[in-house]
Length: 252
Image (tube, rainbow, N blue to C red; front, side):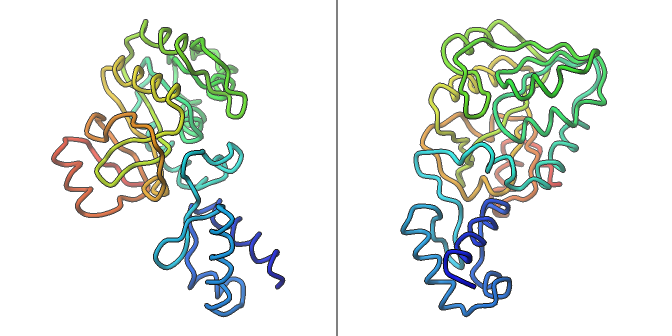
């Protein structure tokens, strides 16, 4: 297999799983460990991945991954997370759904629910639920972020502040080991913060790849949410911390 073909295969695996492991790549691509290590060095030097012990993870830094890549990333895990989250939301509830591909998966999982009021700053969520007559959809105003259908800025934050809903369902780009929830866009973070403050209870939805990522702007903390639905915790220490925070950790 030629170098460029291997690099493409490695990046595709990273986009789907959030990371790659050198040992598995040698088996999948039929090359030596030395070859894989060289490939990873070259890919990381180009800023496409970041080296970690035993392999590499998707590069984060100061920019988010492209929307289409994020939508494909950990797709099965997001669907499991969405299904479990939908079980926490009763019929006749009012809720917020913020920007993100995991919250979009939750919107799909809510299509069987009845008599919901959904407030969102995510046009993709609004489009998913638009065809369901028993669901009232309220779209927050704001500046359209064309790359992912998000509505951000002062108008979005002011619109959200006018509501008090039963449940906020939020995602995050990255989760720090100490429980901090992180994102890239300060304007988006402001709206997410407002969503948390304007809900009676909250559910964080994020797959385990978020524990390997970094982002510069703080939304809040896992300690502030009532439920955290994910497909894996980074450590027993984190599990213990969730118990101390009285955040119910739900693994799917």
